[in-house]
Amino acid sequence: MTAEEKVGFGHVRIRRARTGEIDEVLAVLDEAAAWLARRGIEQWPSRFEHQWVRGGLGSKETWLALDGDRAVGTVQLAAADPIWDDRPGPAGYVHRLAVRREAAGLGRVLVEWASAESSRHGGAFLRLDCVAHNPGLRRYYENLGFAHAGDVEVGGPPGDRASGVPTVLVARYERPITGGGS
Image 1: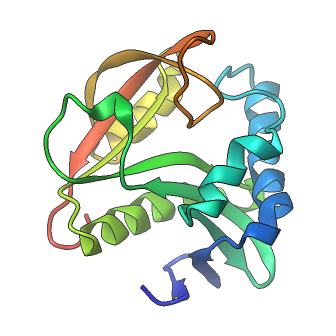
Image 2 (image 1 turned 60 degrees about the vertical axis):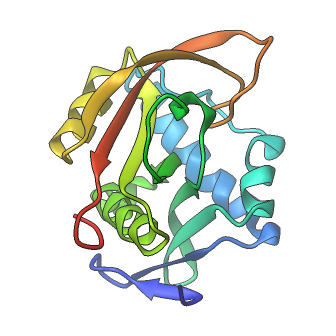
């Protein structure tokens, strides 16, 4: 993967987020979380904590979508997720997918990019989850070709997995990766 990849969404390019760009990642996540909250959708907390995203930056799993120098989207693409241990096959795991309102529609592009990126690394599936009580987001993923693969309880901050903490029911979704992405 090159350091930057142009995508079919205006002048947006996707590149790996740098550890010093935590504030840019948080700004996108917080804007998306605030938008959800204003609409009465309980998907994420109203604000993300630095420690919730620091690990994804350090492991080089967090990506930024940039329009010029402005971060307009972010996604974490992981090679593993323990809530999927019951499902066979190599996969890419999408977490913390968010876009600024000015880039509405970019989410689909980021999902397709994640599918292609996972394929380049041998993935056969693209997998993700969302809170089970968010019917709008569930329909969105289903319209992108994802199939429901069961609900599980998870603990910890959004996109993390922790035990011994309060849990939330999440709906798992997956779709096969064919031909280098969908």
